[in-house]
Length: 386
Image 1 (tube, rainbow, N blue to C red):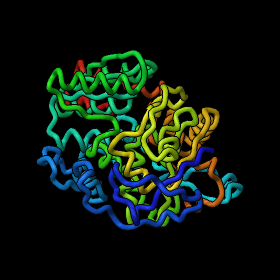
Image 2: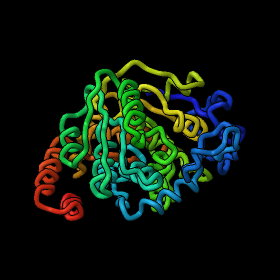
Image 3: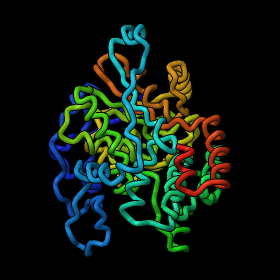
């Protein structure tokens, strides 16, 4: 297990310029101060004042931004259920109870729809560019079809071919680049500048983070007595969003990274964002190379622990989910793998099953989308594939 320190926000500035994290054991209670106070160095609030005058005091993201996102996207996303996790005998042996936040049942097959919808709606975007490992691009392509917008998705080498095919079947344009996530993001930024499109990153954006945080709002509303929430961690948008939703709540928030790409554990240990070489993991959606500027300070100031899981543990968790009737892709099984590794001492826990875009699900969705687009209006097409 890889464990990284974090710092209590009680004395933190909640901005990228604040001090390095103070080490804390993995048995921290997770109790925090309420929300961060205004900071001149913090990023713009999710309400969208990105054109504030130079030198103006900007308000960092807080729970209110997540609540605003929940109201904004309510008509476009599914409120996913909390479902029982481990079978009863395994629950008794493990000594704890785990619930599963079923984001694999989300429209578009993953939680990514939440952040994408919040950004696209708040920005009024009609021409969109994004870098993605696949699920963010699928979410944007689905949104673009419903809103009459255009989307171009930049994907790095190693992107799942079935995810690329689904983006295209939904009407999105795809651009492949050699290299890893860093090269993908650089190409997406350049393409947005060249075309005048709106750049909607997969995690490193205030509106995206706030939208992903609605997962945390739903968890805490339905399981207010949850003691620990395990969150899969790639770019960090979902973990940062859950951290925002958890401000003022005693729940422990634990990020779970693939052992091959522990960019947040390494960064928090170093006290600053660290860029890793491109890594490989069966969890193809969690191959980020470095923390984002928006998620990093939020995670640094609120997360309780970070754990790393091997590919074997991820695949074992995915197999367990399948036996329980959950068709989760490997990235979607990472949080449960972390919960199983952490084991006893976590009380009533929730693990986020972040995505269900398996090869079979993607292939079926692409076929349905391609067929529906040829014979139906956009609205009926989306209703048919939901």
